[in-house]
Image 1 (cartoon, rainbow, N blue to C red):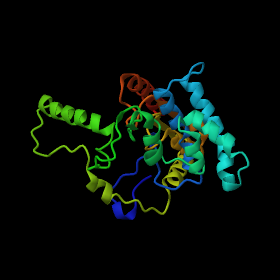
Image 2 (tube, rainbow, N blue to C red):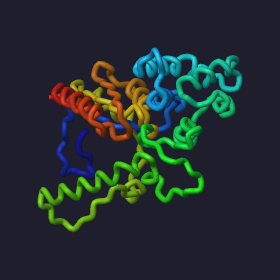
Image 3 (tube, rainbow, N blue to C red):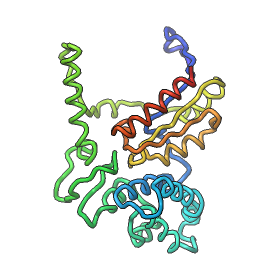
Image 4 (cartoon, rainbow, N blue to C red):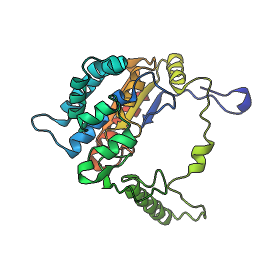
Amino acid sequence: MGAGPEKADTMGISVSGIFLLGSYFIEKLPVEASATDLITMAATNYFHNPKENISQKDFIDEAFTFASTEYATALFLGDTCPNKEEIADKLAYYSGIDKTYWLRHHLHMDMQKGFAHKLLEDKGLALGFYDGRYTWNDDPEIMEANVIADDPAMGQYTPAFQTAYGLMRQELNITSDRISKGLVFDVNMTWNREFKTSPAQSLAGCMRRNKQMKVFFASGLYDLCTTAGNARYLATHSNLDQNRVTIGEYPSGHMAYLGKESFDLLAKDMRAFFESCI
């Protein structure tokens, strides 16, 4: 990492640690998203429909083992899979979504259009895409004005953030007239997503050059957007030295620091990681 000819005034910096929250590398992975997303489906299903005689952790671990073995094989075989019924039964168990839905969709699941609307369909509720613990009335006659703000989770905590920013301005005596915006789509639209070297390849290259650098992949288990399974896959399939890779999953959503339990766990792990990098 350092300066190029287009930024000759930039000093090179040697980085000893990178902390990634809600990991997504903006590149198509060579694996079915339905398989990597299954642990999030399992965690969210367990939250809304607790199981007897098994802990949430064990339930998620079972779902991951199934996703990485039987389910991955079934998806690879596609329409030639000889035991679709059996696979669909297990998918229904872990996800909470009816077997017939899985079969009708060829064992695939879209987290936003499918899972978020199907899990609590019998109660007339939809899940938050950014935090599956949040729900609201799934009324098809109510149009969404904003793809992010019109979400059961984001619609709840964004106003709280904005209020906090306002209080901070008062307490810190910030007199700037600049407006704080919770969502700024202009930034998203101007972000350059074209690259010669993928984020995964860049990270692997950095870790190869710097043998001291470590990386931490952190995710919220109830995040239906950038799922914990996606982070697990990136952490273990990007040609990284696994001795310097840490994976952390927390009982929260897209913002893994929300909620006291998740906040405390994440803060503890962050401090330990940063100290290990110094």
